[in-house]
Image (cartoon, rainbow, N blue to C red):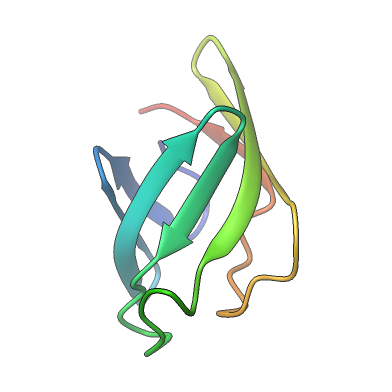
Length: 79
């Protein structure tokens, strides 16, 4: 998936800008954690987001304040 600033979302990993870490999906929730640029590791530093997808589109919206300040809200297109 690509959008300005989002370089990779694949398997259990993500890379966006200077941030890199792990990701896990549980139903409609997607959690980003272990971000190298954030310096917060489990159990701290988990960003909880809502995701939805249709066709080649992925939409993310914030569920609660992200402790690492990730700016991920928006729609992404698979490339």
